[in-house]
Image 1: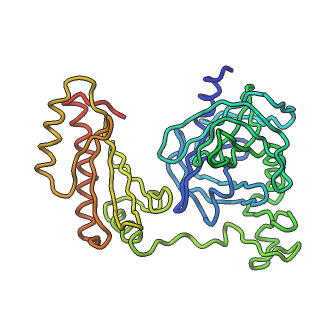
Image 2: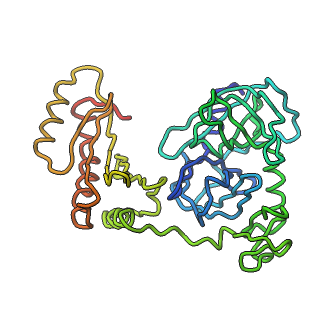
Image 3: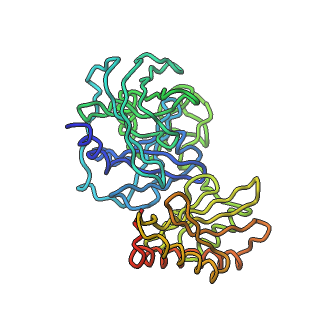
Length: 361
């Protein structure tokens, strides 16, 4: 395969992951029926939100966490295994410094991306683990995605990047993943965690309350974690989202961030605690390259007629937005505003494209 074919091959198995605290990337292994990601992406959650081009947005249970290797395994339910390609590990293939690699990722709400680089160091020791150091550009949301060689085999899991560095990223060698998968499968695949102290895998059968039966160290299984419950303004926002007919738990995408799909429109909601500002932004479509005067006239007219929401143009994006401060937010006012935003976003994007030649994003 050439580089583009490899990137396309992995497009369907790379998964977007979101929690109430963060976003990240994972990848689905058909052989095991599991999504692989980093432990720090799934940390402190009982389940996460997953989505890919062929995995519908859904909750996936966290069935294994491994702080030692920064690994987590997720089990989605609503999948069609026949749609997924098989991918292979390069666990028996020796790596060399200077070898070309490809890092792929899919941060939640953003486009699938791939970057190329080369291996610069195979012995970057961190906590007794020899990480693969490479210069394929990684963004924070790419954590948990696969690192791939030129033979389309997985050689590592993208784990962390050095801040303010010139594309210095680190990936966990795939041997650690393969070892963890084998050990997890041997337990019966119910729910497990690697003890940070003795490194044994603890399961529901080998844990006493929250203590490892092997060494007595404190350890918590994913099944023992209490689901996240919002409070204060986030709770009010989620109540409003639910009242509009959407599931709040599937709308979360990071700290005080939500995403709603209303018909053909995608709306992002954010709450900025420092300022008390709540925003809703629907990026509808792109300005046409020619004859834009009529579309501006239309947007200005709609702004004159509308209350609570307004159109703007950001670069080439046509955006429908609302702004409200938390001190003015209650379920009644919030419901009215967000319902108007959702409905108008779904209505106007079609008008702008079909009548005014705007372009879909």
